[in-house]
Image 1 (cartoon, rainbow, N blue to C red):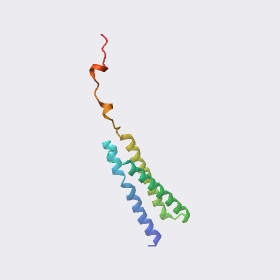
Image 2 (image 1 turned 90 degrees about the vertical axis):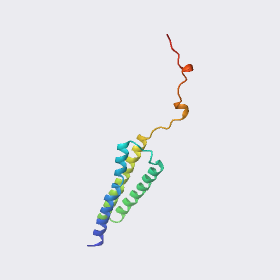
Image 3 (image 1 turned 45 degrees about the horizontal axis):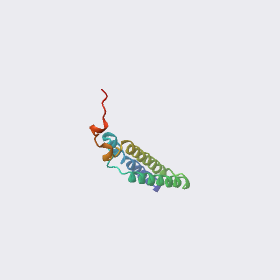
Image 4 (image 1 turned 180 degrees about the horizontal axis):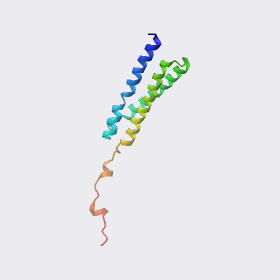
Amino acid sequence: MNVASILLVLNSIISILHPVKHIPQILHTYNTKSVEDLSYINIICEIGLNILSLTSCILVYLYMGKRIFFLPIVLEKASSVIFIIIIYVLKISYTKPNYTYEEIRPLNNNENISINV
């Protein structure tokens, strides 16, 4: 077995396992509709790092002669970016607004209600 075949097998295994780690988080967030345990900063940093990594992998693939053992890495980075963007969209859509005391205080019945009889 030559080095290119070993790299292809290893990269294929890593390329399957790395994006799969985001699927349980997506399913848990979708099922519970709870995102309080997710951090905006962490998600944005993950998106940024994965986009940079995807860009560098695409450049390596293009400038190293389009070798086949780079394709699983490029696909893995692209799918990781997509999964993290899904997590970010879920975070935005399921985040509950924070209310202040002034917004939720009870109405004073004597001052604000006028009954026309």
